[in-house]
Length: 162
Image (spheres, rainbow, N blue to C red):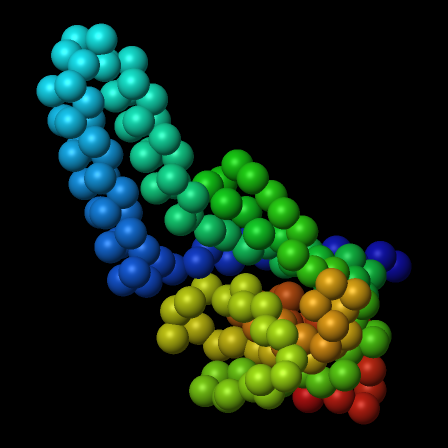
């Protein structure tokens, strides 16, 4: 029987995101005032394009991750601004080398880390150590719900199931 589960995890924005959004808005206002003083009424189209670009940049800070587990393959996609999707990594769970609770753990610096967690300190994060063609040996940090966690555990090798 086939198994399929998907989960959407919204990344909680940190303080730097709020500062970056504010700086983009302030810069757009400053440049629009400067354009209006230099070009007058003819600059209104440029100002409209400037604010459209600022809105586009601000929306890019909205990030979600989607975990899709299909028959032992875990695919993780990054969704930016609720409109653009990019496949980050795809892992066959039967080839995972280690799996466990990641809260408060520091990871080996020689491996890449792919952080797809919610960013909330209250959520339980798990790590997956695996080999990937794009990243090499890497740690994948995820925050699965209970159903996703059970499906992941069923496909892990018996030597590392916890």
